Image (cartoon, rainbow, N blue to C red):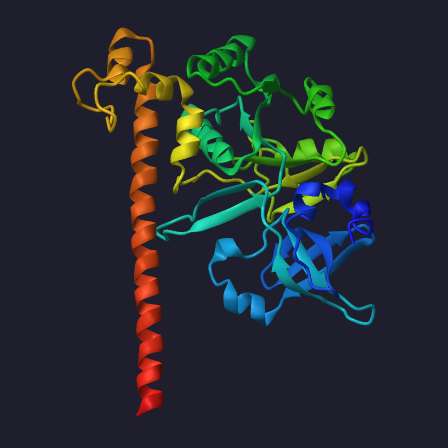
Amino acid sequence: MEQQRSGLNQLGWSTWFEQRAQCRALDHVARVVAVDRDQLLLMDQHGTFRARLAGSFLYQHQLSHELPCVGDWVCVERHSSDDFGLIHSLIERRTWLRRKSAGDVIEHQMIAANMDYVIIVQSCHYDFNLKRLERYLVMVKEGGAESYILLTKTDLVEATIQNSYLSTIHSAGITVPVISLSNITQEGIDDVRRLLQPGKTYCFVGSSGVGKSTLINQLIGKEFLETKSVSGSGEGRHTTVRRELLVLDGGALVIDNPGMREFGILGADDGIDESFLDITRLAANCRFRDCTHINEPRCAVTEAVKSGEISQAHYENYIKLRQESTFFEMSYAEKRKKDHDFGKYIKSAKKDLKDN
């Protein structure tokens, strides 16, 4: 079976997935390219085809983040005479990118899975936002992938502004590699091309109109992703309408995403600690092990803020993200408990009806 799947290596398959695949004898492995409501577009070494989730899978996995998303590997049954394949299982994710669902819903929303790198795109023209950037970095770290920062539309700002953004990133203790790019002058395009390795998966995320789809079109060499004209201010008005996995001529795989301005943090304590390593290391010197770094005496973190070692803005965003993550995690746990208790009540009621 492993030999039969060797042709999938160019799509990101590896020994890691092989060791965790538990497919039935009649199933074969494919990767999710796109999700369109109840249909999924899959890809294997022979091409693309459509599939649906088996009823037994849906019965056992009712939470949205348990369902296949773009980048996932699945075990699918497909006969030559069938128009659709039937997905029976989801292979364990090696990495993932998720956020709290938009609005008041306390659930995880999967963005993509099994990417090697997440490229966080921000435009130098009106879009640069350090707090949003740190949010992305936290969730990428939480999901286990590596990050790159891509600053686009450098042709629309003075060099001093671009340098100030780079300084802001450095001052926040962010050590992630940064690439500057202009889709107009082509500055930085070659740097991005050198970054993309065959068989590796790269997920592009950022707000609408920052130039993600335009860049991917340039990497593909044709207008594959639909774009629209930019506004008079120079900001893009186009937006990707769905997440999609694409294979470039050089062999790299890229995932384009719709713009996301809201990126809620849910259950990401480890990602926060790793993304704010300067604060995490200082916290080891606090007087209390459970220090909240807000008003406790002899807190190494607040003392570093007072001395200027850590910027006030960087500290405030750290505290905000920790409080947000804790709040939503408690709300999520409470919701899961209510769902569990309700499920037990339904089973008990059914049993009583049957006995009577």
